[in-house]
Length: 177
Image 1 (tube, one colour):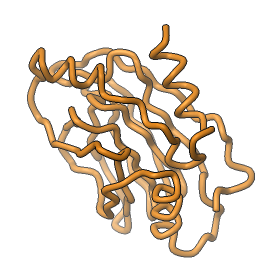
Image 2: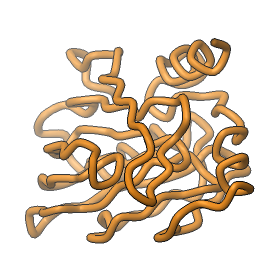
Image 3: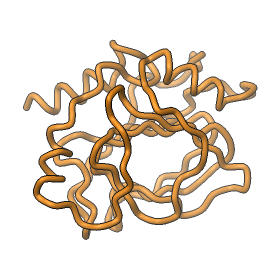
C-alpha cells in the first residue's frame, strides 16, 4: 500500500557524465519520498509487492555497494525498506542523497551510485523492468555501452504507481524531445 500522503510526483535529478561514470544522457533519476506509511510492518515485503504488481522483476534484498558503479543493461529501482543512508548518485560530481525507510529511487541505466554511509539496519529491495538484467560496471563505458544505455527501453510501468505512474510520463516526455 502506497502512503496516501506520499507525493506522487518524484524529485527529478539529471546528471552529466562524471569522470568515468556515464550517467544517462537524457533520463533523470527519480526520488520518491515516504512512499510507505510510517509504522508499516515489513516494508521489504511491501516494496516487493508494489514492484511485482507493477511488473518489475529480478527482485532482491541487500544494500547498496560502497563503491561507485552503474548498470548498462537495466534501469533499477531501490526501495529503502529499513534504516537510513547517504547514497552518492551520479558519480563523483553527482549528489549525495539522504534516504530513509519508505523512500524509493529509480535510476536509469548508466547512473552511477554508491553507499557513502548507512545505519546498521539498512536494507534495500531492488529490481528491474521485465527483460532487463543488471550488470555491475566499474570502469568507463565503451561507445557500444553508451548506445545500449541510450536506447534501453523505457519501462512500461512505474514500479510504485504502475502503468499510469510518473516514471512512464516523465521518461517518455524527456525521450521524445
